[in-house]
Length: 153
Image 1 (cartoon, helix red, strand yellow):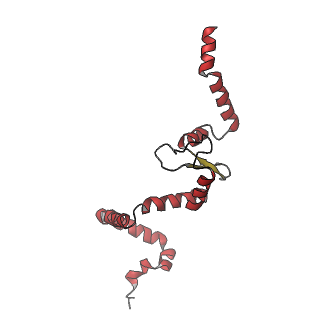
Image 2 (tube, rainbow, N blue to C red; image 1 turned 30 degrees about the vertical axis):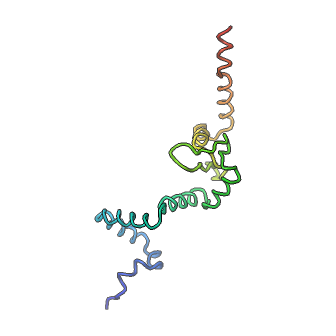
Image 3 (cartoon, rainbow, N blue to C red; image 1 turned 180 degrees about the vertical axis):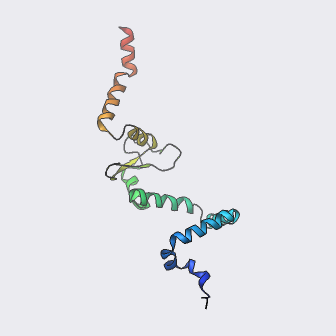
């Protein structure tokens, strides 16, 4: 005898946990076969809960990448006075509306929140303090005041 609830099993949390990969594959196949339905579902949810996908994505990213909740992030930003921990800018910069979570790539330890420019700069210098100091010395050596002094000589 066929269980009458067989079609409803996919909405059960227990069934989903036991068969997650199968359910995800089935849902993805349906969405590929019915793209308009998938878009409409997302559009309806976005109308009911504006910003839902953006907040959910941000929350997932912070938790899975850095082990932070949205509240942890907000507390860090408040403790930094709403500014980049390096340059003090109030603007995150770049294409994002959030400050970047700076972290040690070896240990994963979160350090502070940085604007896009400072985070990119530190990353390009491989998080190496000695390399950063050499870059600073280079900039001091080639500062406009030094250019004028060499031209006068």
